[in-house]
Amino acid sequence: MGVILPLLMLVLTSAPCSAATLPQTSAVPGGIALIPLGATPPGTVRFEGGPVMVLPDAGQYWAVVGIPLTQAPGEATLTLPGGATLPFAVATKDYPTQSLTVPNSHHVNPTAEELVRIRNEASALRRGLDLFSADHPAFPLAMPVQGVVSSPFGLRRIFNGEPRKPHSGLDLAADEGSEIRAPAAGVVVLTGNQFFNGNTVLLDHGQGLVTFYGHMSRIDVKVGQAVVRGQVLGRVGHTGRATGPHLHWGVSLNGVMVDPRLVTGEWR
Image (cartoon, rainbow, N blue to C red; front, side, top):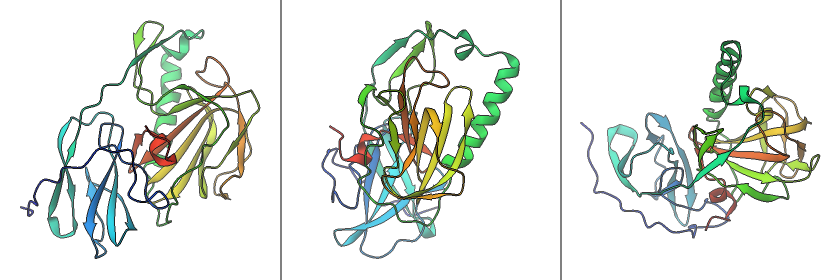
């Protein structure tokens, strides 16, 4: 049995420990927990069996942990090298509900043939979102498009009167054809046209930080391509399940989708 360290009660604040190095913290479902680990490099730290980002800042190391939207409020646990465990607190957060009308009924109730395609695409996305490379990500990330937030993260969504999964990113409304730019340096790990997401790109930024771009009208990058901050990835569109031109921007941390505003320094 691992050694249980005293429960670490995180202060839920929008202020990062260092705006240049760490994202903002909000230890709620769909948020990010910043957990101090001490001045010595800790080795691989895990949450729910998978590795988490560890970054140095202010003289010590920090675990940067993405918390699933499905996480129950209360105590959660990190596993440290050697089997020791470090509990931390997850607070409650209630997300509002959004009802949308989707003209194409197949985007709400797909056929059996379409479901096969959807499952294959979901598997490819999962492989990309679960990547954990050694690159060192740089915070804060830039917003990828100049637009207005039309749908925030975490909304409980109802399509044509039927409940569906919560909204896993930000919808940024912008003119058709507006440039979509890389928010930070990364490597393109997936491109393609998907049933729900339309034209889609995934960027790997390192240590479990992967960003997602959906509903694009055009893709201007290729798998394996290294991109720099500000480089054009493609253009805004409304491909897939979309009611108008916008970018669906998602941020995955240790394999779970978190509120993108926490990595841009714009969370309130």
